[in-house]
Amino acid sequence: DAGVIQSPRHEVTEMGQEVTLRCKPISGHDYLFWYRQTMMRGLELLIYFNNNVPIDDSGMPEDRFSAKMPNASFSTLKIQPSEPRDSAVYFCASTNRGRNTEAFFGQGTRLTVV
Amino acid sequence: GNSVTQMEGPVTLSEEAFLTINCTYTATGYPSLFWYVQYPGEGLQLLLKATKADDKGSNKGFEATYRKETTSFHLEKGSVQVSDSAVYFCALVNTGFQKLVFGTGTRLLVSP
Image 1 (cartoon, helix red, strand yellow):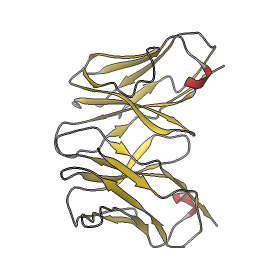
Image 2 (cartoon, rainbow over the protein chains, first blue to last red; image 1 turned 180 degrees about the vertical axis):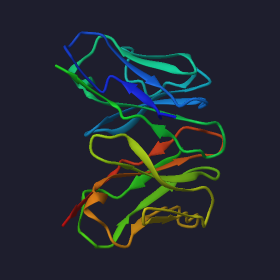
Image 3 (spheres, chains in turn brown, blue; image 1 turned 90 degrees about the horizontal axis):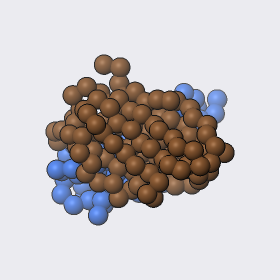
Image 4 (tube, rainbow over the protein chains, first blue to last red; image 1 turned 180 degrees about the horizontal axis):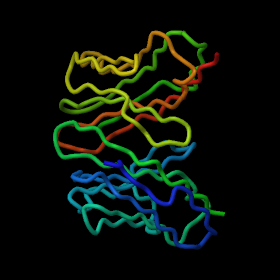
């Protein structure tokens, strides 16, 4: 398996524009997580899904952020409208159901909002 | 709730020095514990894990022992290399949940 695949790797956009980040989890994994990493706040869990259903979105910072998982092999994280403070590295991770299985991370998308 | 506390960084060492990065946790039940490593420009990779008390996880010369009595999972390596320079994250996942809880990360800098 190629691992968790995220796209794009880098995104530069202007304030106010819509940004969509994409993630393909590892086949057979039934949990998917979106994290945001910044120098100031470290690694933050934004939302996670189980079997394509959002379970906990309490980490989503504002209504400008939304996430979907239309099927087991694809998820998106959308920011609309984007703001400079959204600049960060966004990671997707996936894991199997089962006791204490580690999560596998993608390479991340570095988002810069100017 | 569940939480992980790591020592502040950066930790700066010379090559071949001994490394300890402290990690303590708060959790209900019987969590599994993990150390992840993040190299520059990359995502997080699992370094080692331990699923029950007194288990020792090990990989690439790194070790950590799950100490329930002190709620700790300290990372150690006997002789660090320049290539070990990275950010190290301690994490836990609790029984019945799949949500990983991470510490704030500790940056390790190893000089030749």
